Amino acid sequence: MKNIFKKFDFLVNARRSLLYYISFSKNILFVRSIQLDEKIVVSHRNGSVMALPYRSIWNTEARQLNILSKNYLEHISRKYTTTGFTVECDEVVVDCGSFVGGFAVAASKIFGAKNVIAVEPTPLSRECLKINRSVYGLENEIKIVPVGLGASCGQFELNISKSQCDNSFLAPDAGFTGRSVSVSVLTFDELAKKYGVAADAKIFFKVEAEGFEPEVIAGIKNIKPAKIVIDVTPERDGKSPIRDIIPLLEERGYRIFKQTKRCLFAILTD
Image (cartoon, rainbow, N blue to C red; front, side, top):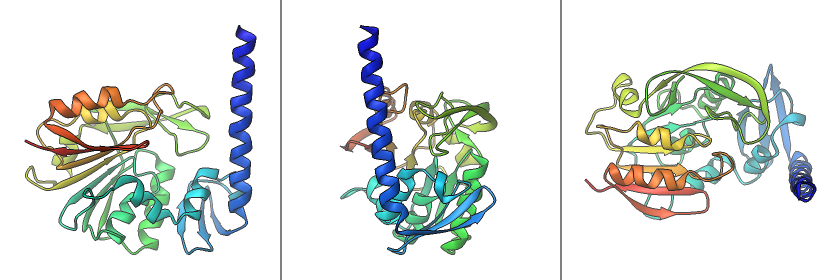
């Protein structure tokens, strides 16, 4: 029986590797890049530009090139918004797990948000985020915050993944490097207080925390976003955290607006 499972795992990993290299090969033909130390600025022939946390174009995550091929900002905005659930220009946008700032930039550039708080605990991702903020001329609109979010405040170890886009306070499901960095973690309430978000502000809260989403939602106590969109892909021990998230949202007065394969959309009803 063990041999059967091993063979199955081998086939799954082989298929994943094959799809990865097909995607990489397809998209590498249409991009140009400029190397900046451990970062690169990549431009696709469709006009999409983004700084990414890789040493060269040859070790860039295929997923990131694929997003570039679909137009980075438009793809990210389609993932985290839906009909009747979009960013409004008078909302404070809190982008938890901002990575290189794709959604933060889209919130301002596409939807007109003037106050975006980009929360990103990984130092290298923040460097790319800072470049992207400048590339799109959004220094006044986007504030970069070097913390993580969770159920309580403190110092946590952030595990670094090979892909750089799967870094997590949990053990990464794939590509674990064994490296970690110590990161300050705040609850949502403490973040809002520390960075001047009024208790009665209209807040659009996007959460992408690589499986740590239940802890992030548990950190919402008194200051409640009007809208929350949460990535619920299977990144918590290979499973989706959605069953843990829904009760936490309901306890806090939210109703589920919509669920897609990748995201859960919720609206405050209190």
